Length: 84
Image 1 (cartoon, rainbow, N blue to C red):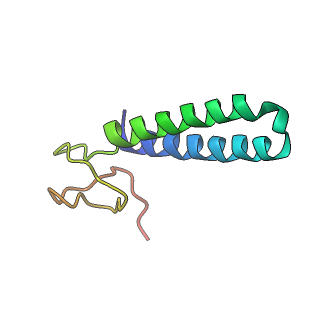
Image 2: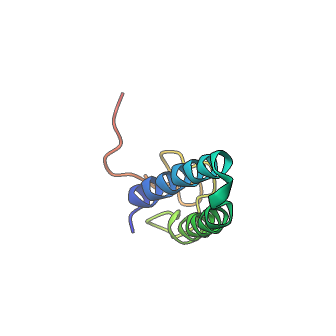
């Protein structure tokens, strides 16, 4: 999975987890199901973060600070970065 796709998927899962949390808060009748769903989403986010948020060149984990260049090998992370 490419870095851009992994980042987008991770952010979509984070938004979904926040929405499920809001539903749990509003309707206590689905609290157990919502909690289990949130934990599943959290696990999926963690797996994506650990396995796919890596430099496509050297394979090192990028961590939270994902700039334009890899902090380990210095190569450009994204092919189609918009120029300002």
